[in-house]
View (spheres, rainbow, N blue to C red):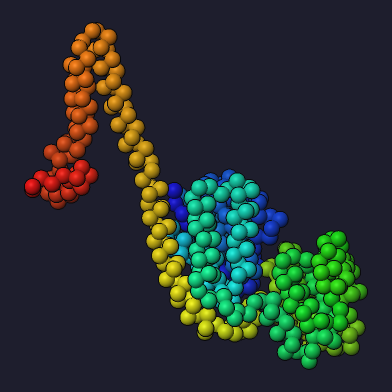
Length: 417
């Protein structure tokens, strides 16, 4: 069994690359099944967020798993390599522990990633690609994240991406209270951002979603209303703030649509925040006058607030993580010896059965039990002592010294005394 992790994140790849490797929730089960059925991995879990795509797997051939990723998304491997990191078992565990603890996030100490990791593990479990190796990794990952949160202040004073969205809007408009705000999508990220905007009591909140029912359910939480995506062309000119986060593989808001909205608004500015990966808003929209378009990568400077204080706590967290990585590595080593232990016990049981069969035959012939038991004990002793004795006799040079030391420790012998 070989634990390996590979992927890219906001530190290694720009948004334009990350969005090409995203795994929306609706295709994740198919992707997991495909990865395992391709024999590139025996176990697999995929973490896909706006800031990262990572694959954790039990694979004897990581290169084949990487090839699967490139084929699944239709991208040449050589095009991906400059942005990818590949981690062995120890590094993969350390990375998973850091990610879950918020140490590898754009927002140092943020908590949303832990929920996203749990969702990824749940998805793998439901599909049947989560085996004992990955289950062991992630159960330890969640325990480490809990320990870091409870033992350090790494998450204190952090500014979430959803809070940063409001701060960005406040840099453009005097007050949120006079604005009409449109949210496109009805997922977790939109709910978080809408909660922060609602706290500023905007003039109007609207949820635009593919299914009206789900949009209405979310809109009710904020005293807003809901529309379908098909109503966007007519509705867009009414809104000063537009925040998008859907799982669409293609842009929902195009340049032409925004141009018409700006014209209808008589060039009053629109603040647009695209939190989706892949992006919901066409890149060309950023070139339009009176449009302030931001993506997840653009809000990095805002979420840096309070980072210095959290960085000190992060050092404490790193110490906790290092000790837990050591424990995990020890667990992996013990797992690796299981087949050897099983084979050793099988060999011992084979010797026992053969000796017992011989003893039963002797008893059946009427031989004295005392004689049979003596013969049985001698046979077992000779058979079990033969391998180490032979190893001692045949070893030469440094190998002989190593064998002597090993056998002395195994049998707790002290020849010198």
